[in-house]
Image 1 (cartoon, rainbow, N blue to C red):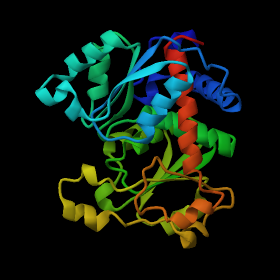
Image 2: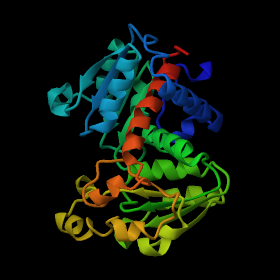
Image 3: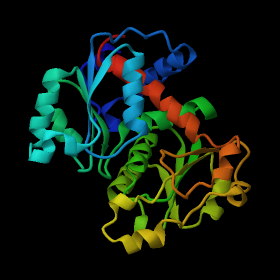
Image 4: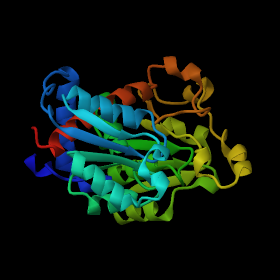
Length: 308
């Protein structure tokens, strides 16, 4: 796995299935014993450049680096950085790369992570670029499925909510397309359907998928239900957001239609799309999913920094 040392992660396809499986194995070992790499990154610095709000992703990366014995520097508000003075992204990245051993970046513009990786002399990890990709969330999602279902292939996976702007959906759909016998069901209002470029990837790889607007109609088929919020920050028209935001709410009535071994995932934060009454259902896995995110990011940092 030394071939991951120094590598950037811009989208899920940057790593092979073998490399991802190796990451998952290390993450599972860390979960069993979180001290196994506790001093492996001592003296290493991670720069966290967040040009857009984040809780789980930023904190889980910082927790991962600290648990590996390393340190973090960066910003969670672009207003406190020189970007507020008009500094270009390329210059910000060059500067951060001169101080740190790796960069984690979230940016509201699609393609920003790819641009950053071209100007950085250290690995760049994409923590979300607009509505495009979120590869470490995808690693989190796949690890959660692997842990709770026991496999990643031969599954029917439903995606529900904002499929147009949902970068976590785009990344996970592309990643799942690489596994065997995956069927996907995309459930959304007509205004928020999956982008054509993702559908084209699925068609090219002969992945079975269907689209509909009815959660009740589909939930009984699913092994995994991936809920997403309708993202207010992606809308130009607030009236459209208000009209669509509560289209799908997962409640006990809808959950009663699902399989006994269904798992419900959500990249979080949630708003109204999952009722709090679902939290006590053993099939609700979104808080476990958040913890798996820290373990998989510990494994990722260990590999790209070359300490394992």
